[in-house]
Length: 418
Image 1 (tube, one colour):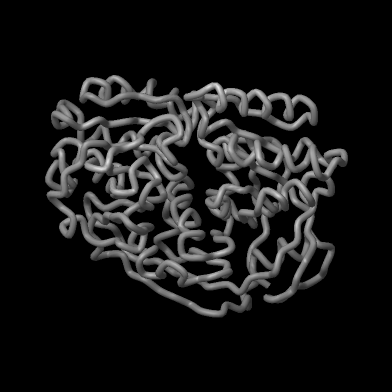
Image 2 (cartoon, helix red, strand yellow):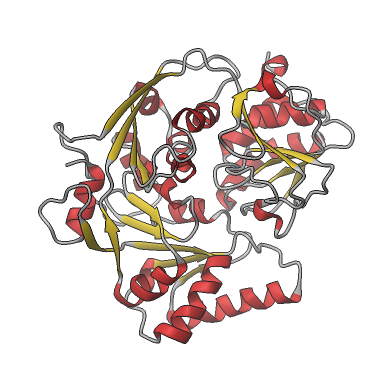
């Protein structure tokens, strides 16, 4: 069996499982943000009306409404706070950071576990060697909260092997964007994606993170990377809670094997209307932008902030461009302060925001008019996601975002790297 099959078998009390089997498995962690938490809490209290079985396994993070723009939104957060107090779940209030980064940094996500959440990017946690999948709010309210369980159909697994060495100015986010296009939107429906190969093995943990992040956008159920010494050291630096390191058998079966060499890859950009509209930065170079942002579920990492500072140090962003910097967690903001990155980017004309998901869905910030365009490290670029459905959304690496903010248009970051 592979890692996913072993985890699902263990959590459901079975010796073995095969793709297509339906299992009822014990859930180790439920991650909710303020939007999904509000919906789930109402269903649980008003319709389920049972005690919460394992409140210590439930985590709610306020990362979308990090600064409520209206009385209605503020009331929703107050109801979430009351729900958390009533049931004794973990609550991380406004300014704590992005839901997924908070879940990892506070030790709730560990190898060998089952993690569920209503955010569609929950599979990102497979980077730590666990089974992580998004579920609907009613599933959380009806099975996870009262019973600590959820049901799954065991997915078939596609093994994706990446090799090669990236050129200067090309970073793991470029490879992840490119890989989304190679697999294709809907190219792996209800599959588990194993990301492997020497390229993945050489990456640090927060760069490995970027690959399971794309799982949902190609239709997958979950994504994962085999845990190794890097994984173990990383998790042990964050928590003293015990965990099991589960790995795939050598004879594990895969429905398909795909191999890619990223050695010739150039900086990539994904342009509206979908993530599949991805290509080399030169294809989109020159398109004007009025907004730039480091943020979102995959952005605002310390790596992103460092890359932006490398481009912008001693320079100023273009007139008419607004550049938002949104740390993924309070820890990242503290590290950016210690390294002098906050001052560097402030002097370049950037604006710092509280640790959160940033302009994701434009609930607190980042709404655009129909004539505007944004380039960001976000995970999505769908029409209407940030204001007008006619506004344009470009996704790229932090290098590309910073270079574009400097030029006032989509730009190749390699022109600004010494």
